[in-house]
Image (cartoon, rainbow, N blue to C red):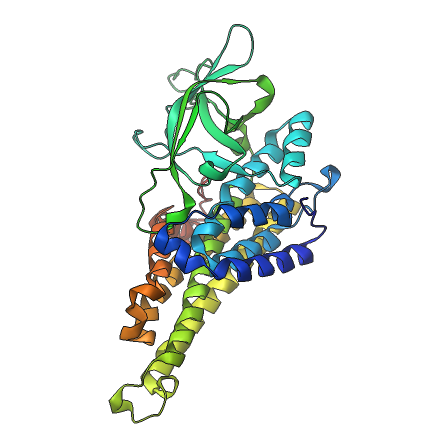
Length: 407
């Protein structure tokens, strides 16, 4: 029976215990590409998947600062496994913001019972990552027909529910008018669809060099019948001050920061096993001055990223207590900074691991390369170069960052 977590302290304690369990076979799962079905069952049973459910629906309604720490903790153990529930929490937030009372009662109740929600939003064929060809079309008898193809559908293979982003094809965008406002694009919605619905095919074709066990493959949608009460508006989320994008991004930052800490922890273990360089004239590798210097620099790098992550999460919590253009912009800027710092730390530390550990640390059975592969793969998720641009514009001109799900 699924446990119900009551507060943030308990959520962090549960995350710590799960992380210790997940770490035991993380290297083997990655090496063999053994999908974490048993571990995800434990995640469902633990109650963590329901911690953001609002209190009036029976959940703990934990703050973002707690949720970010949960993700960071899990990612220290396994950057692939920790990635899987990311979209679960992102789309529960979309439900909180846009769902009807009945929809919220239904899907929040499912989350509290351990159900897993996974994304089906990214596509390969559009001009940009923001373009969607997947459509929801109204059926004459009521409801919708859902058609399209999604990729990078992390966790879809393990999900009870897929949350599919699609264009509402029957709603016409506004036409351009000379001297008038910019035309509005065709609105989008997200459809909550059971994974076993006829017309849904989930393919395990993810072949990334890192995050091997996320099963971030393809979802095919062919004439899927969707009821009205399974569709939640998506576009209106960004029509007002919102932390929706910052919430999603701070969890990505938490994954990067967790991978960085996990890699540094692994490096410490390897230093304990390494031989000192003969020119150092010391008895242990941990006494070698240049190695000590590098280790100190890496610890400072990781601690800085951890601090910026906490600062960003706190900024989101503060903004959600008083949603304004200014508070949400500040939360997005703080999150962008944390994401850049986390990405840099994850890639640098997971590479330096081998410098600290020496040649022995490159042995294939140890599979320590998973830290770098996971870091390098995950940090491609959203270009940090654009986050740096938004931070610079905010600093120099006071230009608020745009409202979208990537900031």
